[in-house]
Structure formats: C-alpha cells, structure tokens
Length: 345
Length: 78
Image (cartoon, rainbow over all chains, first blue to last red; front, side, top):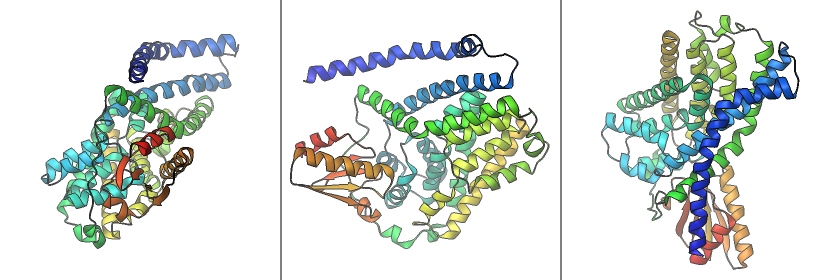
C-alpha cells in the first residue's frame, strides 16, 4: 500500500517534469501552428478581417491558458509553504514600516480568498498585528495575484508584470503605513477587540514535495475551472475588436494626452467588480486600440483591488470613516501609479 | 461523533458540507454534520482560512476542500 503510493507520487513528479519541455515547445511554436491551421487547413483568405479575428482567437486562447496554468501552478507550490496562521504569528508585534513591507509581501504569498477576509482580519487584530500592517496585507492580497501577473506577462511582457508587482506592493505598503499613522483604531467595531481566538494544532504547510506539486495542480484545477469562461469571453471580445475596431479608436478618450483619463477610469473602476481573468483581455484590447498603459492599468487595479462587494464584507468589522479612508488612500495610490506609467511609457 | 463545517457561507463551504455529509452517509456511522457560519465561533477554533472541518472539536482541515474519501479517512482516524 505505502509502496504503491510512493510510486504514484514519483510518477506524478516525472509527469510534471516531462510536461515542461512539451509546454515550452508548444508555446514557442504556437503562432506557426495557428497560422498553419487558419491559412492551410481552414484555407482562409489572408487579407480578410474575419481571418485576422479567427487567427487571433485560436492563437490567443491557448496562449493565455498555457501561461496561466504555468504561473498558477508555480504560485500554488510557493503558497504551500505559507499559511495565514504562520503569517499572523510572524506579523504580530512587528514595528510599523518593516511590518507593512512584510505584510504586503506575505499578502502576495499567503493563500487567501476574499471570502475569508473577516476571519483573517479578526485573527490578525487579536494576535496584536497593528491595524496599518493588517491593511497592507489586505490591500496587497487581491491586487498582486497570480492571475493578474500571468495575464499581464502574456499581454505586455514580463517587465510590465514586474513593474505592476512593484507598484502594487508600494501602494499596499504606503497605504497601510498611512492608515497606521492616522491612528484609526477607534473606527474598528468594538466587538472585534473582544473576540477570543483559539489555537489550531494543524500545520497546513508541513508537506512533502509531491504533496506540494499536488497542491499546485489543485490550484490550477480550482482557479482555471472558475475563470476559464471569463478568459474565453475576454479573448473573444479582443478577437472581435482585433479585426474590426480601428487602431486609434481609444486614443482620444483614454490616450496619453488626456490627463483626466486616469482619475476617470479609477472612478469607473472602483465600484466595478471582476477578477483579473475577465478584465485583462479587455485591458489588452484597450491598449491595442490606443489607450495609454498607465490609464488602463489604473482602471484594472481599481477594478480588482477595490470593489463594492469587498466594502460590504469589511463593513462587518469596520466603521464607515475607516472604510472611506481606506478606499480613498488606495484610489490615490492607483492614481499616482497611473500617472507614473503614462509618464514612463 | 460530532462533525462541524466552519465557513461564513462561500461556495467552497457549501461544497465541504456536502462532502462531509456524503462521507458520513457512505460510512454509515451515526454522526451529526453541523454548519457553523458565526464568525466569532469560527475564530474560537483558531481557524483563519475557511472552510474548515472539525471532528470531535478538533480542527482537521483548514482552507481547502478535501475529497469525500479523504474525509472518510479523517473520520476513521478520529
């Protein structure tokens, strides 16, 4: 019994290792394969708008999925080393600025689902993690996530994805630090401070390597199962626009020359809620059609980083002045990022 | 036997409750599966990532949805 488990585990690792070169080969040759399909197998006319749209769709869809699977798998393995309980114990009693930096980094690395934002918040507060440090975690966790990174890297390259990570972390660190400095503890509902948390004995991070691979595969299954439909829909919209909408369509409204486009896109983006998977294909279309990258990123950050449902969840533990402060500080941070990106690119 | 599913009502919590009920049914044991969505109670188990599975007041799973067969194993071990 035990032996057979070991063999399947080893097989699994070998399978994963074998699939990497196959992945790479397919990824590098994808455009050739797709061109062969559209022009030779389907025999479509190279000049037609429809051909362009079809070619874009059957190229883009597998490309996005391949990158996402790789990124989600990798992040899933990294995250298996972290847990909210360990993060909480680590952050308890950390000094403010250093604590904010660590909280933002751990916000990216710790497995987190926005549906457990409240137990996480309560656990942090009870353990003595400062309020501002807790906010750095809560801001970074949704903003810098594996889906956003994978999709950004796919659409705009690794440099942009890295720059996004860096600016997202900076917003989380500075906004959390500012919230801490403003001493807003009185705007947390009183009952929060009376919650007594127990201790669990289970350690979710004590796993063998094959269990970590399993956990990476599980997150691929779980996340891709949840978001695939948004990706296909997003790419389909992109494909439609690709063949038919003129290149500079968005240049006037969201272009570099109109400074007000950044605040405007944040204003529209904040109440909206979508996951990164749904928003990035749209973002890609916007940029391809002449929108400035900073404006588009600001729009995307405000959609995934701030949202009405999140505010409603947080209302259970926070009073309105604190929620409004939190939303405005993060929105100003995004505004600055939007302007900086527009300035650089 | 006393089985509790801790979760504030997200989709995964419902999935875990269903899986736990199925495991109890398949094992044909006398056990009560209770769903807890009160945040203060969830915290009293020290759970910060939901959903979590509690067997006889001991947290055995937190932050993920185990399969029915995994839950059966956990029940048999308890």
